[in-house]
Amino acid sequence: MQQWEYFRKKDLSDFELAELGNKGWELVAATPCTGVLYIFKRPRNIPQSNNSNSQSSQTTPEKEWSMQDLFPGIQITQ
Image: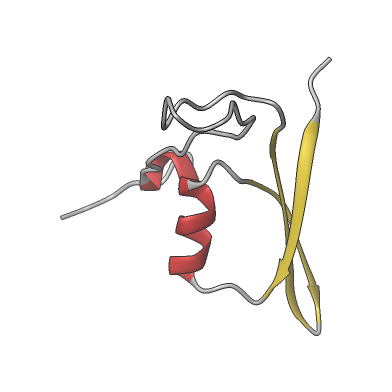
């Protein structure tokens, strides 16, 4: 059964949102309150091999997110 870890943070910049996406966090809700509260999730227990000398850690691998990944259906003009 898939397990998730969750993260909440208020009032993020576009840069901070992109950084969280690159670290594997998926935006699942944004709620207006005193500012905007963002709620993220990512799968738990996904192995990442970054150093053979380190102990086996269970973390989510980083992903490079494109604008299409972040905003499906967006049309980018240049």
